[in-house]
Length: 246
Image (tube, rainbow, N blue to C red; front, top):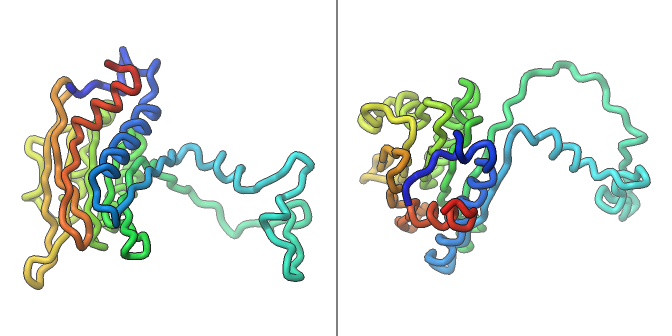
């Protein structure tokens, strides 16, 4: 399936990229669930930072009669149920800018290790690339995964932002050999942390992407278990078919 441009006409804005990314993440999750050993399972996480205000409002659990959800907050065991109507927070000592990054990813969890995350497939959003602080957040999250030995695949098909998060990660980690040259705006990269003798290393498979060309297959490293192939093209094709784009 040739890669389409989901961020410009004729697809955008009629066909929302958010809907397609959600569909693609689900397709990747379904494909991995069908092929992973039984000890593993996947979960899809979709969180767009600009929706954080609505998410916070929902957590307040205010009912139709104005109650604050006493059955959730407690009241049993002799404790007094909390109420947002009877408590006013004091004035904050400061209010500072917050960064609420987009997360569109598939997590692979290990049932033999307390359901810990052992690998991640992340789809880049425009907001991950639009500001220096957002790019820094994304690279920091990637670095945290890798420092814990978690394998990661990053797929970036965002055509409206030219920043290359992978090359920025390579710059930050002083790994020039991992950079894509010349620097493409679209790419897919697999990262596999492992031990080489007593030395920690990260294997990198970096592939440039182009509109009109198929996507690659990449190895996804499962912490403590080995690798499993992720067919980005097959899952992308399924997502396009289920979205009515072909």
